[in-house]
Length: 153
View 1 (tube, helix red, strand yellow):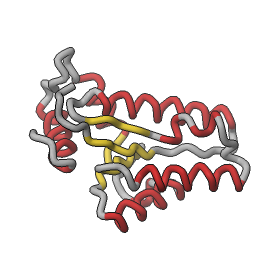
View 2 (cartoon, helix red, strand yellow):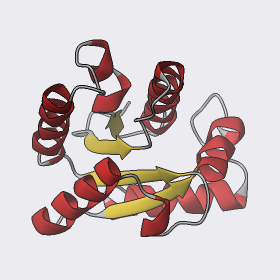
View 3 (cartoon, helix red, strand yellow):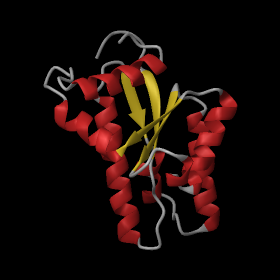
View 4 (cartoon, one colour):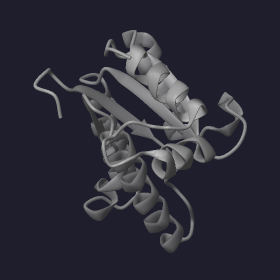
């Protein structure tokens, strides 16, 4: 990492499901997305839903509300919101929690970027040991993300 102040990226991706196993799968995916984005020089990514369900029950309304409130307050400290979507990059592909995070980011003037699961997977697979992508498409994605938070591209 560089000696410059790291930019904090809030990662939002789907979490909730009736099936507890699916919730844990989504937590694992959130940790993976967080790790991938944290590979980028100058960026530290955080996804509260990657760990909060270990402490709070997402199926309990009060505990879910507490988790969402924590996420909203943490988002206010971040330099960018990255929404991870599985399909088309529109609000139609967002969960209610992700929509609330997007609305908070908009109100606070925090930049928002959509990344598809395919794009974040491309970043992961293309990243070299030096942390420099070789694929032009991935380089463009990384440059857009870095530029949006004020990092040199």
